[in-house]
Image (cartoon, rainbow, N blue to C red; front, side, top):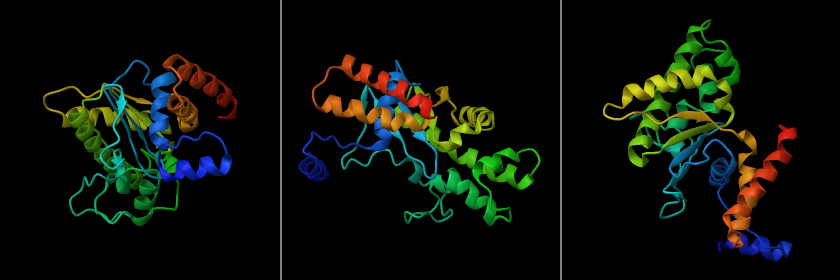
Length: 231
């Protein structure tokens, strides 16, 4: 058990399970969301930043140091724009809610949210260019992920996933063009949205307490039903 779990358990006098928020969201998507029935998939939330929950053969990929899934910090543009992490050319510099808005403003556009920038597509050449560059980078990153992990499904979450066809249609075309000898996996929107992390946290605790899979799934289903009115 990590030190933070020990501290929290001592302070609260309750059993405590500590986990990664995006991996918890991935658990929820697999139990009751868009990834039901998939033992190999990736959840990629695209909001202010970008991360990933990676599931292979039914198990979460955590890595040697627990840092697996830093999808947003794959350096996809050699010598590209600086990232807050200290690297250059990171994926989330170009494709994230903060990244798209920043690049649009830096190129001479108004201070707009990514949602409003997407709303200008087709009528604003600058919005078209910045969004197209973001799609290119995301497609490249997802193609790399596909070739490394061979997921059966990719689930996109976060605020940027609400862009709908402006995101999913050209993204599918770019991903297919970037994969020469295999088909790209289906890319779908998260079924649980912003509730996924919370919906996955409670089952995570149950699993660490030894609950069986059926109870974990029942708990996730119940919690998702309770969260829906709050969306």
